[in-house]
Length: 543
Image 1 (cartoon, rainbow, N blue to C red):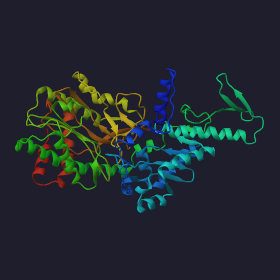
Image 2 (tube, helix red, strand yellow):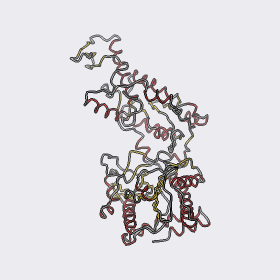
Image 3 (cartoon, rainbow, N blue to C red):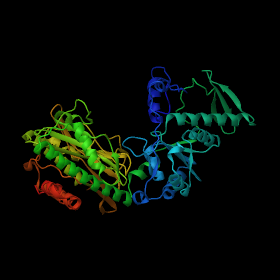
Image 4 (tube, one colour):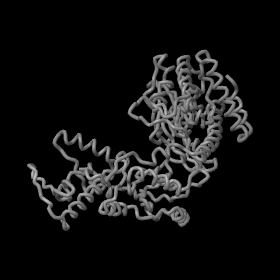
């Protein structure tokens, strides 16, 4: 048994296939057993974060334009409706943001778009009069979150073709729609059609056969005990990738401008924090913990205009903890920094204009030659990707090896992807694009995508290294009608030179690093003063 509203159609199909191989079935339950236990054990209430309007100056396109584009895609697929299931797509489509999920400015909701209307299904207590007016002006209605089930059943009873993305739509909604389609077909057969025959299979299952349409419809009880419906043979459900996925991933000019502004603010916060950290550890001789510096970094970000929250829990790994790729320091028991520490710091912020994600690795003492070599090979991989020019439309796995080549030459590698998509004031991890060795992701890279560039190297129990900038894609050239793309850095934070072994860098790589620091200083220096300005100038001196 399973709670079908927890799993996507794709995941439920995998479960069902595995279970069927051992003569078992995936059976839905009306009352989730975990929920029943949890209710009496302090289960938190549903999130009640208020919804806010995402300004057009950062969204770029208004809601009417986005809905029009969705309907154009629906027409191509002969769809009467499309279900928008993922929370970031809901927020992007309606130019709203929420506060229901920690680190992600989204609201728990669905949207259903038909040819002539759009409906947001949400807890209506989260919707202010301003937000309701914003939605009404765009032709979007608001209904209770749980009304979506009945409305989808009605669409199925009416024979409407509904577009769903199996990787996003819950198996619960899919099961509900399949059974509504089946019930509608059975009622259609039983209401006045002549010549309908009842056929019984060897298994005992009965089917209704209509000689006019030459169609068979399974007849049976749809109550508890039925296997989950994970296939629609009627053609009513159109299974295809969401029409919003690529539209959201390819940012417009205003979204890119907002991301640029977010990274300027974030750069100021990081520079102030890194100066404070050096003073605290080296000059004052204090030994702050990984947890304490994570909290302090959030304080610096909070001083910046439009900051709302971290975009993910800060990864602050001192020494061996830096080798734990998704490490999160806890208040008790985490490492403390010292004048000999090597620190991997991966963090990000959510701002009203955009989302950031940046990693820097710093050493407070004197790094070993081995640490310098590892760091420099990571930097070479970072530069190789940053300077790459490549044909538009190729998938990310085709360029992943550029970031690893220098590491491979030294017998090194890392066990994570090189880059992930990032939302514009949305999820810090966003599909469908990415850069990794996983060749299953065939999404082509297009102009306007925002991704991370983050090669690394990790020695268990010793240290971790990662250098991460966010970048966006834009056209580099067009030759014989073939568009070639390049990456432009969004992140504006100095890269520590103490850890670099200059002899391993080519003249072109040194030139890239120096030019990057010229840009960082030009961008941030007007925004900081005093000792912070002096610190920044020193960090940005040419290698």
